[in-house]
Length: 624
Image 1 (cartoon, rainbow, N blue to C red):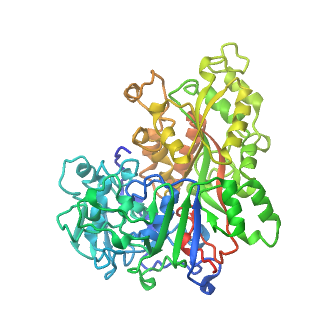
Image 2: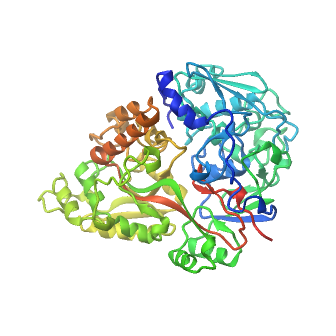
Image 3: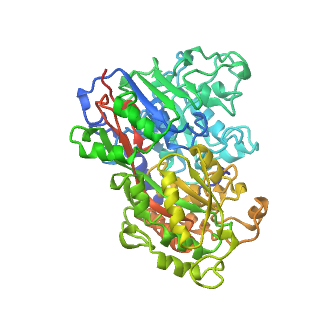
């Protein structure tokens, strides 16, 4: 993603968000952070996980912008200065706690300098188990995140507020001037403007430390030297687990001669084993119950569901349980404890390409919002256990519930209103006779990317049925999930609809829905995730092979919200949401998502990680 500058002004404005982000220096994880069984949990055994699709960027922490990868990082592979306790919101799961830091950061009176104190005596996983984690390792991670060769597809924009970050990334400076390590135990971060949510940003995987390479002390990127494209496969863990075989990685060899740990085989498997350098007394956040976590990659939901039933695997982390399996587990008292449904702080939606006919016309976009049977989409996903019909873009918790119940396209039971849809279509330039049916060639065979996994093919069929009443037909391209997202994020593919997309918060603030999704700097290719191209300029359209169209922008609204804190900040995000839904209309939001997981009867302890919006893998204890 292109770098952007986050501008916040006024030190007094920052205090409320600082409090929300970091608490006070006595902040401790609340009781119950070990899940439902607490102290009775028996550690040990192997947790068996399945993934329908692989992670997106081969576990590279500077690139991975994907909740599944973030769960593996947070629970298991990486520790950060501040982190989360792997529980639900009501158990403190959206709050920050010291992790590698000894306490919450000290913040200067002007809000520009944050000082982190780092725990002594903590070491990396093998083969660097004799290397202690120090302040310079966090600077190394930030330098790599600033490097455009290493951060492709990532989220470096979150760190542009660090003084000198962008200059270093652009090759204009030899160091990031706002990062200093006066000693091994102290990291000083200087900002260009007060940034109250900086603590959240330093809890992201990209901010996890990268060790130096003892065999090559001059290697600026340490263990990541020479691995701009593939460091994830050579990742040296700081968390309670590591990739199996990590101890055999040889960083004394040139980068192109090094062999990755076999514990991650892209597209096939992930095997995590205990990191012998990790100790429970140094980590208040991760109980790390399983001795190992084995993940198979690939398969279809129906087959994987049968394996969960049989106990061959314990859960599917990224799939959707088939509807018949959900019904069986929800109605059988002996199985109900194995069905888990948790709000994931995510929304599912249909995207429209605002630069491509017929979706350059707001009346067409509004017509789609009226036409789609959202209740049907929910039922095809599995019913109310999977969430509730969405009427707007941001999840309610990020807006202090200001827009709870708001839906400018509300229809009876959320089933759509075809007459209102036709009334909107009749006002568009693509309905020449005003009969509510599109009669322009751009409405025929519309290029549509979708997910090939269940339940998306059935949902696509419903979308085709709904849009058929408006004279619109699709040319669907079902793809593996990560491929689908790559196509939707690349405007050069000239797609018209993407029907299987979703977005979850990065942390508990509306900022994580605003700029990443709707700022001009988030327009691809090479950026994520303003797929509809809200605010695209004429020059950007020409560069991407589009004709001249007038696409509305949200830049002014975003810039208004960014400096604010407290209730004013959440209200501003709500106002942005209204503006997007009424004046821009880039999506058809249809579901505020619950993460639904069915576990095998081997799972004896459950916990949900609100940060990643997924099960907390290290807290899922197993029997046998």
